Length: 391
Ligand code: NDP
Image (cartoon, rainbow, N blue to C red; front, side, top):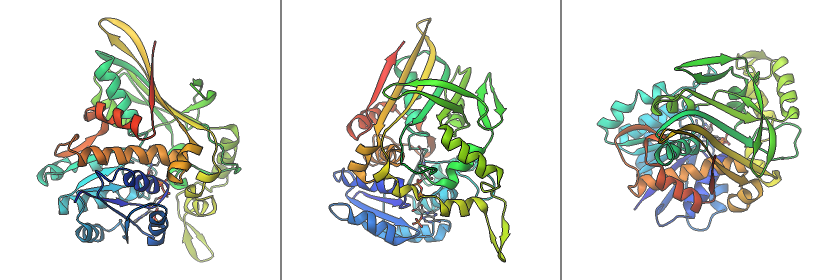
C-alpha cells in the first residue's frame, strides 16, 4: 500500500494532508505526525476518509526512525521546521525511505540557512538507494521548476533571472506573518544578497526596492532579499549572469518590523527573564497570531513568478512565468491561507511524482534537476495554474 508520512501539523502540513487525501489513488495510506498530536487529530477530523495520526519529536533521529517503522511509508514529507531537516533525513537513510522537504536546513542558534549539510548527505542517500527531494514548496520549489521549464522550452542560454514574490493578502491584523514567524522574520531581517557575474553581492537588509507590476494584482513595493533557491539555481543553470529575488512588503508591515528590531524583539540571542532564559524572537512568535489561524481571515491574491531573460536561436527574449493564487479559494479547499496552500500543494505534487515513479533517482536533488513537465501539468490540475508571457 502506497503510504505517505507527513511530519509537521502546521499550516503547510494541513494543506499537504488535505491535498494528499484528494488524491487517494496515489496516497493510499496517509499518516500525519507532529510534536503535538492533537493538531494532527484536528486536521484529520476535517478530512473524509482515514488519516492516521501520531506524535514525534523530529529533532531526535531515533524517534523518527521508530515513527517510520510503525507506519512503513515509502516517502516522508517533512513540513516541520527547517531545524528538523537533518534528523529526518538521517532517519530516512536508516530506514531506506524517500525524503522530501520545503525549506533548507537552518541551525536554531544561527540565523543562516544553506544546503551544505543536506547536499553532504548525497552519498549516504545513494548508498541507501533513496531519493531526497529538496525544497518542494513554492519558493523554493515551483520557482525552481519555472526556471527549469523556461530553460527546457524557451532558451538556449538563460542570462538573467528575477524571482518576484507578492503576497497581496490582507488578514486584518496590524502585524502577523503568513508562515512560521520565527523562520519568516529570520529570513527578512538578514542581509540581502544577489548573484552577479559569478559571485554573491551583499547589501543591507531591505535596502533595495523596485516597483513591480504583478499581473492581476498591480504595482507593489518589492524588496531584494536573499532566498534559498538561488543557492542551487546558480549552480545548476549554466550561463547565468545575474539572479535576484524580490518580495513585497507593505509599509505597515515594515514599520512594525523595524520597531520590533529596534527594541530587540527579533534577536535570537538568549536573555534572562525572571530567572529563565528566553529567546526574544521565540517569545515574539508566541505572542503573534498563529499563521495556521490566518486562513479564514485572509483575503486577496498571491502572485509568484520568475522573469527570465536569455537567448534563443541567437535572439534575446524574455519570458515571465507566474501563478496567481487566491487566499479565499485556498481556504475553501484546505482550510489554510494562500501561503500555506502555495507551499503545501507543491509538496504533495513532489511526493506524488515520486510515488508514481515519474521522478526517480538515488541521492539528494534540488527541484530544477528533475523534468519540470510532469510537475507543471500537476500544478494546473491541483489548484496552482500558471501562465507564461513571452516578450
Ligand atoms: P508552522 O509553524 O505552522 O508548523 C510547523 C509544524 O512543525 C508545527 O505543527 C510544529 O509542531 C511542528 N514541529 C516543530 N518542531 C517539531 C519537532 N521537533 N518535531 C515534530 N514536529 C515539530 O510552520 P508552517 O506550516 O508555516 O511551515 C512548515 C515548513 O514549510 C517550514 O519549514 C517552512 O520554512 C516551510 N515553508 C516553505 C515555503 C516554501 O515556499 N518553500 C513557504 C512557507 C513555509 P506542533 O505539532 O507542536 O505544532
